[in-house]
Each structure stands twice: as C-alpha cells, then as structure tokens.
Length: 81
Length: 395
Image 1 (cartoon, chains in turn red, yellow):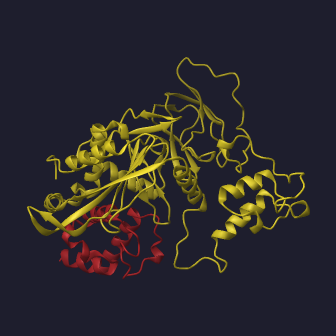
Image 2 (tube, chains in turn red, cyan):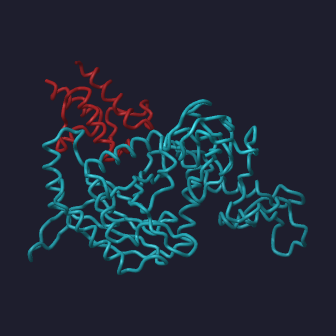
Image 3 (cartoon, rainbow over the protein chains, first blue to last red):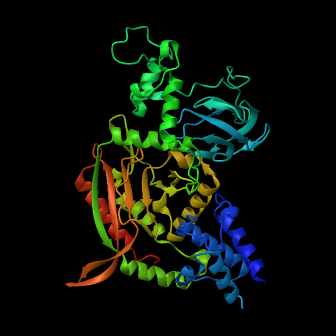
C-alpha cells in the first residue's frame, strides 16, 4: 500500500467519523484536535475505523504521533512495514 | 393510537418541519420505531411512535411546517377505528413570532396611543425587543409614521449579531442561527427562572487514570474506554443514591425521574451543542455505557438523534473532555434540577499521605436548582460520585 493509498484511507475514515468536516479544508498539517476540533471520542472512533480497515492498532500512547494527517500517514506506513 | 402528532422536543419548541417519512401507508409499526425525521431548531430529529399499529394514512407532507400537536399520520392498532375528525391535510403553518408561553401573539400593528415614551411600536415589536434586550430607540421603524414593527426588531437583532464587514473567513458558520436561538432561549429561561446554587470538589483521579491506561493498552481500539464513560457511570450511580437530583421541576414541585436518563452534552464543531439522553444509565455495564456514548456522539455528528433522547433526560452531564479548561460552572437544562460539570483533567500539586505530589485531578462542579435541592444533598451526591468513580468494576 502506497502512502497515497494510506492518505486516501485516512481522509475517508476521518470524514466518516466527522461528517461535518469538509475534506477540502483538511490540510496535511491540520491538527486533528486543535484545528479540526476532534474530541477524544472522535479520535477513538477514527483509530477504531483504521484498525478495522488497515489492521493496524494505534495504541493510546502513540496518539500524539497521529496528530496531523501527514504525521498519521507516516506513522501508519511505518507500522505497516 | 389514532393520530401520530408533531411532538414537543423541548419547552421552547413551537413547530417542526417534516423532512422525511420512514413509513408508508400499510406499514406495520412497533412501539419505538422511527417513523419520521423532523427538522427542528436542534437539527434533524428522528421521531418514534409510542404505539404499535398499521399506518393508514400520511397526513403531513414533506417540507411542511407543523405546530406541536398537529396531526402527521393516522396509525391504527388492530380493531381500532379512525377518529371522525381526522383532517385530510395538515393544519396551516403557524406564525413563529410569538412565544408559546405568552399566549396569543400581540397584534403587529402600531398602538393607537399618544407617543409619550419614545418611538411608537406595535405590542409584538415591544415584546420581542424586550425579550431580545434591544432598546426601541436603537431601532428604525418602517410602519406607519415610522412606527416600529416586529420585522424591524428582528432586523435590528440580526444586524446586532452580524458583523458589518461580512463573515470572518476564519470562523466557520454555525449549524444555523436556529440552533443558536434555541440554545439562547433555553439558557435564558434557565438563568431567569432557576435559582442556581453551585458546589465543587476537586477529585484525585491519578490511580483511576493509571488503571484506565493499563486497561486500554491491553485492548484493541473497539474495546477501549474513555474517562467520560467512567464519569457518566459515576453520575448515574450517584443519582440512584441521591434521587432528589434526578428528575424535573414541574409547576412548583419536584417530580422524580422513573429512571436515570443522563443527558450527555456534545459540542458540535460548527457551533452549538446538544444534550441527548442515554436511558437508564445506572443499569448499564461500563462497556455498555461506553458503547452508548459512542453511538450518541456519532449520531449527534450525523444529525440523527431521536425525539425521546431530546425530551427524556432527567439529569445532564457536561464534561470538557480530556483537554481544555479545568472547571466549568454549567447552566441547568430545564426542567431538570441539576447539571454535572466536569473540567478537563490537569496535573496539580496534591497532598498524598502527608507529602505533596503531582497528581492528575478533575474539578467536579454541580449546578443545582435551589428550589429543589439544598447544599447538603448536593454534597451527598458529590461524595457518592467520588465513591462510584473509584468502583472496582472495570478500570
């Protein structure tokens, strides 16, 4: 899976858990909580959806590593080897 | 059952607009089935039927604005016959300008009185301006002889909240001024009619957070628990211990709730908030509470809450989540008699066993209706909350 594929998956799941966010406004360095307004329940729903779709389990202590779409894509790419 | 009518989804609701029918004539419905989607000030709400039967006829049409109580459909149980006075079509649109609690709307015509005190204005305009807190001298009238009409007051109110230069690009528009108005009406009514009293306690949750982190580290995301679910469970169990906090204030008396239905305040990203209730939280296991919260948040985001969730709350919990301010003194959601406000956890110096240590603490602040509750009872609730928060069951 390429980084572009991962980015597409990530953005799709982001919009699924936060249908009120316009994907056009999401920048690679948008902070999920500070800029996009995701709360802890939204983050958990996103992590759950990524686990179901990609089989990667993001532990709570790694949440800071997925704070922006760009960082999340990097982290997931590494986790998927 | 007979007529399925536009429900009241809160004391401030006067009408709703039918957005979607989820049933058709001939369909068999059971109690609790969602039969229609109604657009209200609080967003789209799924409306359930509380009786079983067969849908005979849809009276209301999609897009139609219906006052509370207006017939929407005819649903008959087996062997039941239709009431004789079923309208073929729904009632005409009501006027939206009057406050339902103030009886019939004042006429929107200028009063035929000598102008002694400032500008001439219609009674409806005066009432609305007073309700909105706008001085009549600030409003330009467009009625006869420059008299101020209701529409002039509405225009002045809008001008006051809209910046002259147009909307700021960095502030997202809200989900409509309708929701803002609904919140404004409910909160104003609360602060004008409920004598709030507040009691606070700081609670050390370091051990709880450590246990929760360990619990979650060993589980896949779908099985993880958030602090908010622990707060919700503790709120519900404490409400069982102190039932005087769980219910409604109706006509100068407290009516205790039959069950503990805790409203969960959910902030919407576009602005505004909703507080749908989770039913009988005290009877749920921790994973069930967590699943219920996930479901409520997901449906609130998608604009798919149900009518019963908007009306059956007996106590509301507002938690600021895991980041943010350390304390919140909330406004009670009428007709409830208390609001449980929980600030975001912060690490603070705390005395443990005679020594000062950095510990994770939360501030719990209960806003209580002093007509229904005294400080002693609220203190008991706080103590019960703290006990249930440290419950050995689950994390």
